[in-house]
Image (tube, rainbow, N blue to C red; front, side, top):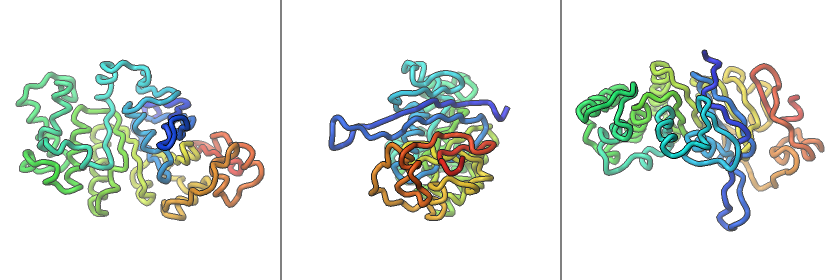
Length: 311
C-alpha cells in the first residue's frame, strides 16, 4: 500500500552546544513531526542551517535526538541497543554529499561495495555468503549502478566524482534496504553528471521498490523526482506539500526560495521569538506574526504549512 507509513517522526528536537559556550545550545531541530510513506520520494529543502542534514542523520540513527521518537516500521530507533540497531540499519542506508569523504581511500571499489556484505555476512535476501559469492555480488552491484568491471581494483582517488557517487550508491543498496536517505548527493557533481545520478536513483527506486528521502538545493528537479516536498526553516517545518502543487499557494519562505533560486538569505535579524520564525523576513508580517508562532496545520488536502495568512 502506497499510504503505508515506513518512517514516523514525532516531536523531534535536537540541539548542539554553541562553539563559544559550554552552556548555550543551538537548536538544530525544533518539534519535527513527519510521516514518510512507503514508496514515496520526499524532497527536503531549505537554506544552509535549516536543519536538513541533522534531520537526515537522525533518521539514519547516526545521532540521537534530545527528545522525540523515530519509528521505523513501528520500532523506535531512539531506544534501540547497539546490536539491535545494527541489524535494523540494513533496512535503511545513507548516501552522503561528499563521496570522497565517505569512501575509505585505502579500499578498492570492490571492497567498499563488499563491506556491508562482510559486516552482516549475508546478502539482500538474508542468505549467508562465501567470499566468492560476496565478490560476485559486488560485481553485480557495480554493473547495476553503471560501473565497468575494470574499476574493481581502483581506489576512490582514481575515480571521477560521478563514479565515486555510483560506488556510494552501490554500497547503499548492497543489503537491499527499504529506505535510502540521500544528503545532497548531486550537489558536488557537474550538471550532466547530476542528471545521470538522478536517473540512476530513480531507476533503482523503481526496480527495488525503494523509499527515498533526499535533500536537494536544486529546486528545478523537484517535480522530476519528488512525491512531496518538505520545507525547513531554522529547524522548523514551515511547509509540506505535494510536488505537483509545489509553489502554489506557497508559504512566504518557500516563495522566497523559489524567487531567489535558493540563494542564501540575510540572517542578521533576530530569531523573531515568540512569533513566527520567518516574521523578520516576511513582507506580509503583521503584529500577530510577531506575537504568536503559527501552528503547523493542514491548509488543504495534503498541504500543510505554518503561516497565519494561509489558514
